[in-house]
Amino acid sequence: MLFQTTIAGSLPKPEWLAETEKLWAPWKLKGDELVHAKRDATLLAVKVQEDAGIDLVTEGEQARQHFVHGFLERVEGIDFAHKVEMGIRKDRYKAMVPQVVSELKLKGRVHDAEAKAARAHTQRKLKFTMPGPMTIIDTLADKFYGDRVKMAFAFADLLNQEAKALEADGVDMIQFDEPAFNVFMDEVNEWGIEALTRAAKGLKCKTAVHICYGYGIKANNDWKDSLGKEWRQYEEIFPAIAKSPIQQVAIECKNSRVPLDLLALLKGKVVQAGVIDVASDTVETPDDVVKTIEAVMKFVPKENIMATTNCGMAPMNRNIAEAKLNALGAGAKLAREKLA
Ligand code: ZN
Image (cartoon, rainbow, N blue to C red; front, side, top):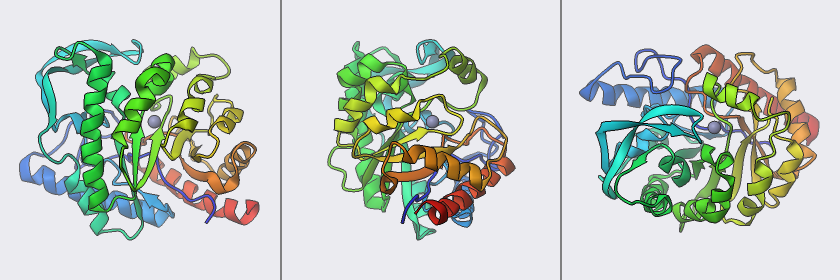
């Protein structure tokens, strides 16, 4: 089927689980109550995607506070008690980040509860997202390895361990999120793609990488305003991604200043084209979705196009996010009728 739909990964959390409309939202519950609430929210996230006509669903990232730290919490060798301030994404914003203080190891499974809950309750294909190695090391202070690349490869091995376990749980696609890829373009080519390939090594399920210019928060919007009329960062990294074994690339297209002709550089890859803007509360119409797909079709063969959201919807208003999901499902259906 043409133009299958998916989402970047996250959905807003219900107000009984966490504070709403913010990143790093504190949980509202503790202990077993939190465990149960995360599971319930996971099932709801799957259900709203199914009802909107999303083909490749996610668990909505309901069980993690943040897309990077949800993974890091289960890694031994990180000191969360003594956070330090660090400028991340080349100093775009400051964050209090934990420090790596000894050799990195997984404490056990990271995402088994929510992966198994989602798998048990949907017949749809299931995508699972994890942060990529470059994005992880850009969100942490290093007090042990003394070498960013060495630390990134150590994380790649841990990601690979969890990815293989998720595959065994019945996950159909692993997507690594690498928003750092359009910030450190030289390093992407020097070692970023190699680290990503290592994280995906030996997987038999589908693999994807999501690259983006970030959530619709102020620091990101200001940065985007500084990048000029055309965002050409991808020109430097797409050729290397095209050569890598990663099968799919998820990228923002709606209201994006990424020139869509750059997508032609991703020869042979399936493009998960962002047709829903997560930085705007204006809900797209199905026709808007068709138009974006049509624009992408100029540069990507239609059988290689999926439709998705530009980025995660975690910080959005829940009603708006659900309306946007519906537009995504309805728009892809209309595109199948009009553009097949
Ligand atoms: Zn994103």
